[in-house]
Image (tube, rainbow, N blue to C red; front, side, top):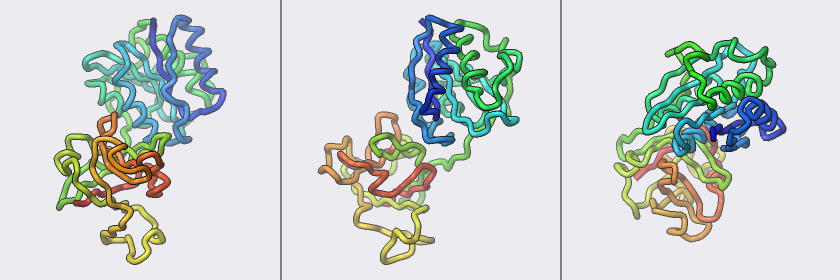
Length: 279
């Protein structure tokens, strides 16, 4: 049975319209909703969610992802074949949304979808009129080479690569889950090269407003606040309820959390903030 996943920022009736198209073309499809609760137009958040989940799916799964602020513009529509331990396909807009997941799966080839691959699309709903039908056809085994032309100038999201310098680990917030756990782009191997389990570090957010700091200005200097002292632990229950912590999440990246509470609310941090972990 073919598997197609859906990831969008729609939250409304629109995912059902996409499913209707898929089931009309491929009635036996097993449709899996990754999420439709990506914050509106937050491409980086959607890219992170897709890259966390896509590699776990079986061989030949098709991932249709739509977080598309540029719908109806000149931005291209893409289909990607990614091959590692298994082959998977990704379909969506050319805005950087698909590329992190493709890289996580393995090597990949990107195709710009031919306009003839779909009927005349609505200028505001490519998810239904382009991405859903292409995804359905791929799930039935149609050749991706017949649906588009290979390209190499696809869009990638700008990111700040994690780095260690002068006892400071710098990274970027890429995702915040429904529990308020803050996920960074710092992978496990880099985190473990910087801090050992049981050690305590300080968290600094370079984008904090000056009003957050009570005794010093945040701009241009390091500000240690007592409530930004975090132990590096294995799991949430290693600290008392309501206390902050650092750990490696199930996704394999460094995570800022609170036991039984929201780190997002506690630290007032949002996606794309640059954070520094200081020893």
